[in-house]
Image 1: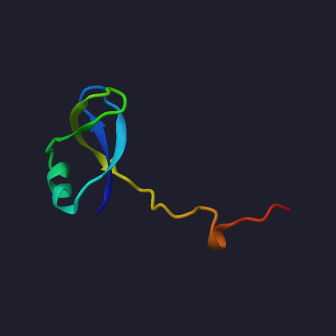
Image 2 (image 1 turned 120 degrees about the vertical axis):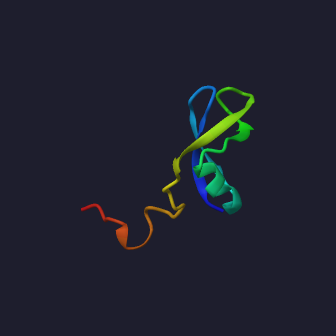
Image 3 (image 1 turned 90 degrees about the vertical axis):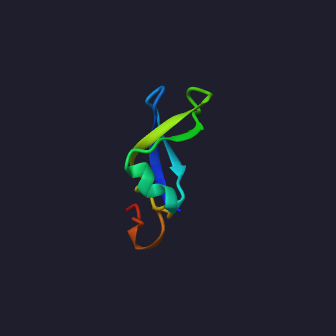
Length: 69
């Protein structure tokens, strides 16, 4: 399931949400989704803002780790 950032139609806030793959194409085409907004504290309409780019992996793991000298 992809993670997308949606924008609240009421307050304009951005929040990441898990979107089912079946809904992803519809949301990208402009379909609104009803979800609760933590800022408005009500269920509001959300529109697609952009895809979430974070992978969830630990940034300090593996070969990318730098040692302080």
